[in-house]
Image 1 (tube, rainbow, N blue to C red):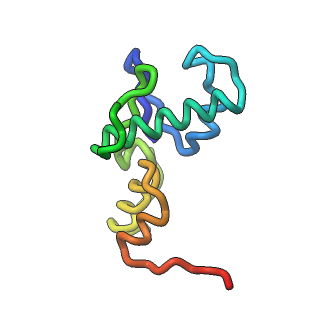
Image 2 (cartoon, rainbow, N blue to C red):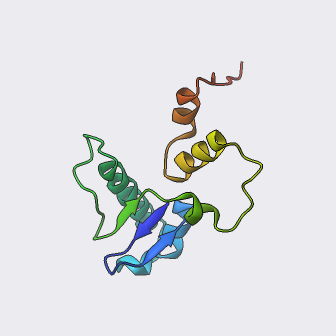
Image 3 (tube, one colour):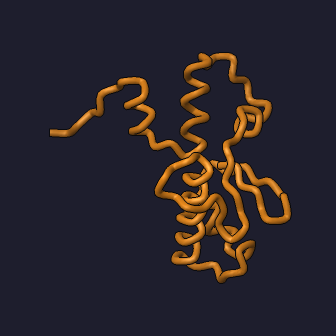
Length: 115
C-alpha cells in the first residue's frame, strides 16, 4: 500500500492491518482494534474509488489517499533480477490491494480446493 497523508507525507506499507493498528493516532483516534479496522476499511474503500470502482464514491479517507505504488517504492533496492516482469507485475498488483484470487483469475490459475 502507498498511503499519502493530508499533509503530503508518504507511507509505503506491506501490511495495512498492522499499520492501521500501530498508527491510529495519525487519524486522531484511540488505538483500538475497532478503530484500526475502520481505518483499514476506509483506506481500502478510498483505493477502490481511486481505481475507478463504481461502488466507491470517494477517493480519500479522512483526507488520506491510497495510491498505486511503484516497483521501486515497494522493493527499494532489493535484487529483483530473478523475477520475471510478469511476476513483478503480479507482486505489484498484490501490494496495491488486488486479491490473490483476482490475480489467479487474471492469469487463469485454477483455485485449489480441499475435499
